[in-house]
Every structure is written in C-alpha cells, then in structure tokens.
Image (tube, rainbow, N blue to C red; front, top):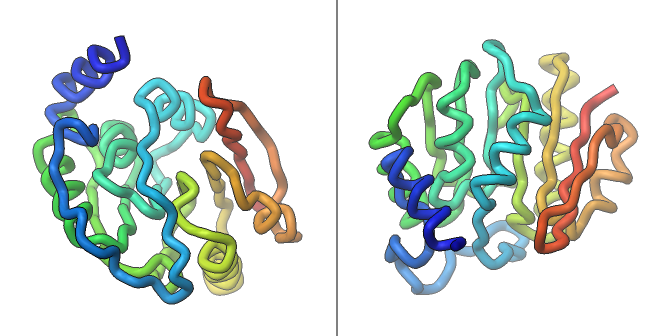
Length: 198
C-alpha cells in the first residue's frame, strides 16, 4: 500500500524522491563543520501536506528546507503561492536530484533555488519558514538557529520553524526568542514541533 501511495504521488508531481526509485552516490559524505550529519530520511507525502497546512504559507513567505535531500517537501511547497522556496543540502548528488525534481515538477508556482552548502554557513536571512527533518546533530542545529536569530536583528520579521523528528528539540527550547505553538506525531511516532518568534 505504501509503495502505491508513493508512486501515485510521485507520478502526480512528476518527481522521483523515493529511495527505491532514485539511485544516488553511496560514497563518503561531505564533512560539515561539526561533522554531525544524520542518516538521510524523507517525509511522507501525507505529513508533508499536513506540515504545509499548519504553516499556512502566504505570498510573502520564503520557505527553506534545511537538509532538503531530493526535494520532496520543496516540490510540494513550490506548488503553493509562496514567494520562493530554497533547499539547503550538503551532498552534491542529492542537490542534483532536487534540482531535477524541481525542474520537472508539475504545477510549480514559486521560484526554486537549491544551495549546495553546509547549513551552518548558509545565508538564510530572507527566510520566513524553515523546515528541518532532523538533518544533523545539536551542534549544527544550534549554529543554524543562532544564525537565524542573528538575522532577525538585521531584518526583523515573523518566522516559523518546523522540526520534524525533533530529536534535539532542547536546542529550540533553549532559544528565548522562540515559542512552541503546535505539535503532532507521525504514524511512526516522530515528534513534529512548530515554533515561531515572539
């Protein structure tokens, strides 16, 4: 049943984001600043759509998927009326797949960019929505969240952060500028927490 669900969604969008259908390099991972990259996972289409509904994106929003992999949620968000969607990914092979998926995507409305860079050094100061599917450990997560916080001083704005499979949620809880405003759990029991600035 799950295979049919994934196949139907990918056919509808004209993308390939499932591990079984897309071959990519299994060589050594590029090393990030903190060397704490997590095992690659992707969000189920059902929960990706649920995340988008909770975020309630608008025409002025800029959405970042930090650790975008093959770009599944990027593609779904690009079909909304947001201003721009940006994928940040360390692995060049996954960046190439994400670019290909976004180029082939049916029903795309938003501009899409894929940035092949270590998230801890990426400039995401124009973002209003940030999505993390447990892409790395607490050191990199802390650096990225602090970069976002610093950008708010230069460019004040309302932001929302989604942390899917919130293994290192204590990092976000320690940030006084963030408030938890919504939580749900996936069928697999993965905690999904939603945060916004005060």
